[in-house]
Figure 1 (spheres, rainbow, N blue to C red):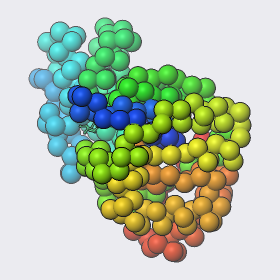
Figure 2: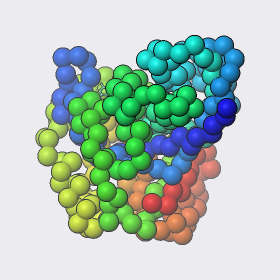
Figure 3: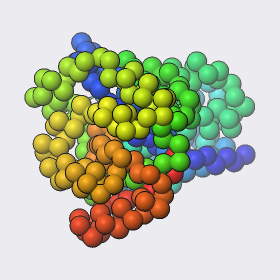
Length: 290
Ligand code: C5P
């Protein structure tokens, strides 16, 4: 039995960190938006235990890989003697703040459950997902969401009228940023570390009211404090994008991807051209219709 699934990614329209918790994680509120930009995971029942292959040589294919860990967690809870062959075809960049790895983990849980006859109910999948990583539960559903806690508590939201017909332009600078590094270095920025807790509601209300101009003033990411200090080029990207027609520009997650919201796909294409003639051809870019 075989199965093939698309594994999506996301941007954070807002990532507001509220403080450090006793368990070492950070309490936060975030507005996450799914992207129609995918890795692919192939599942085939058979063999012995978990066998994982991947087209990306930089990724391990053992228990350090989130796909492997998700399959392992599934087998542990759904106690069967069975084997699975998995192939991960990466297209989303690594350490990019796009949640590619978290999406892979969630998609693996969904695919495993499907190929083994749906033994696990939704709540069990959510619990497994939260144990695999803070962003993983978001990818068990496919709508924008407001996430709280350490990011694992998900409130799905309807698609935002303010973004209808618009496009995301994604720019990855060619280097990654490690998530633990970003969180550790936030300690040097007390204001960013201890955000005020009402930003998410404000942003969501403006996006739902269809007012992108007002909403764009509410886009915010606490993790820009350490990231833009270390990599000032990321601040230059945003300035350039805003000066050349982007309706909003922000770093996603812990970086290193910058995203812009643009009027439509045509506008995004001409903005990419301009961007590349200014900053060179070395960045990875993608245009994603909303
Ligand atoms: O949960 P996840 O494994 O994705 O987190 C990766 C790292 O990011 C954690 O080890 C922690 O350093 C940091 N993190 C955090 N607070 C969060 C989410 C992640 O400190 N809410």
